[in-house]
Amino acid sequence: MRSFYQVKDLLDRTQREEVIGFLYSATNYFVDGKTRFWPASTGSFMMCNISLVEAEPWLPGVIEKVNAQTGETWQPRVSNILEYRHNNYVPPHQDVSSTEQATTHTLIIPLNDRDQYGGGQMMIAGKEIDVAPGDGVIYSHDTEHSVEPIRGGIRYAWIIRLREDK
Image (cartoon, rainbow, N blue to C red; front, top):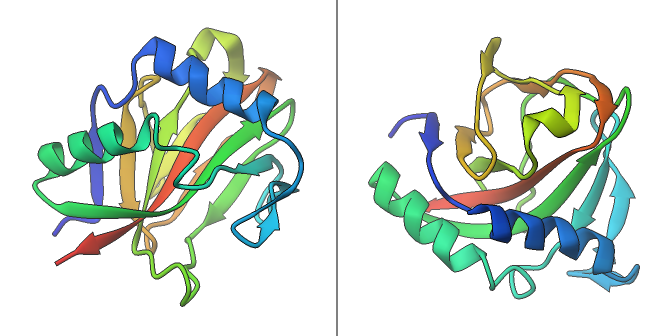
């Protein structure tokens, strides 16, 4: 099994706009035992918890495409929408999974077009990775990754923590 995959055509423009719209229509209450909105503990950006049930309009199709393109069987465990504004970033780090989550990989799907923000390049294992909106990248939790500072506009991404079923 590889530690890094790029996957294509996971969400179309309408679906991406619906996911971003969820961020603005969600109410501030507890979801899956934690507050829906919170600042990231690594870097500088805001996170919005979107439960797997709430993500059902898009998640099954995404996972079906990911499984088909990677030849692996993935199970979603955690779902968050990320919002990066001016000077927000993620420093180089590796992901950690709680025993409760039991995840091994992260899927990141950029949601908005690159002309809507400046900066915000995704780096994986020290290399810039160009991922089109609606496409995704999957990496293992032990792979170092980061996001460069946003120079303007707002960058949105949907992250889904995955567990590989063997």
